Length: 155
Image 1 (cartoon, rainbow, N blue to C red):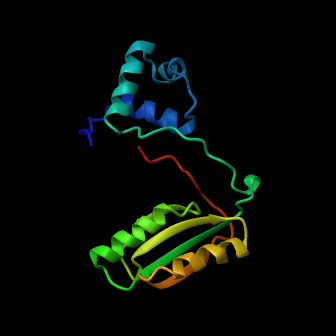
Image 2: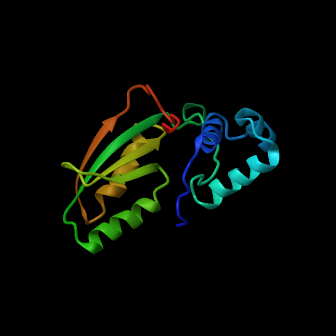
């Protein structure tokens, strides 16, 4: 991973503008941060090449595409051996409903965000996880209502 550059005020303005709207053109960004397009583009490329900007992606409305159920799942493993951890993480990478996965402190080993269409869809997914020999316990927390999501990072 490339070294992280020091972010000055203009870099932070560029990042804030892109967090608000990732489709901004270089000219629009330059205008928003009071730079001419060429230096703005150089800064943007530096932020990309140094991995500060890791990519651009589309955000979809989960409800509109039939994925209206979000479940936060805590998973405890049988043990913390290398094979168990690697096997579980490899299995997670192949599970499309898992949109984020974190190792965590506390009583659980992993916290997963799972997006499915409905309860039968979730039941089908959770049975796959239960079948993994390294999984000891699963606790599900069903999201009732989204209060805040995809918020910009605090720069």
